[in-house]
Length: 85
View 1: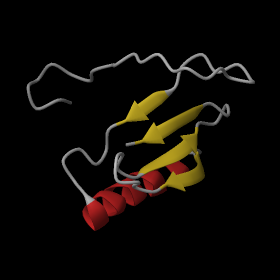
View 2: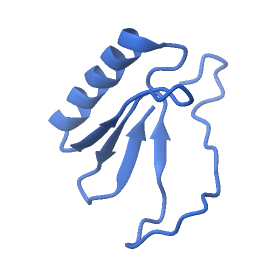
View 3: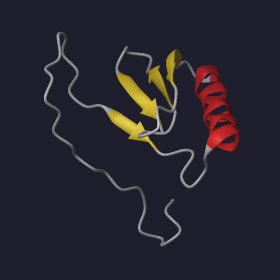
């Protein structure tokens, strides 16, 4: 839950590239908000481990590039991608 008591927020963003396969929705799940470097990675890894135990699959780690912070690409049990951000 958001500290304001409002609840989760969804942000819809257009992207220029098309998808090769059907993926109706891509979620970025905020895990490391306000964290950077090693603290952020530790937060992402902890949430990744929790979700893997529930059936999700870790796909790859996208490391910080000077513009974006690191994130983990995951898949749910149906193969839909989402990111831990």
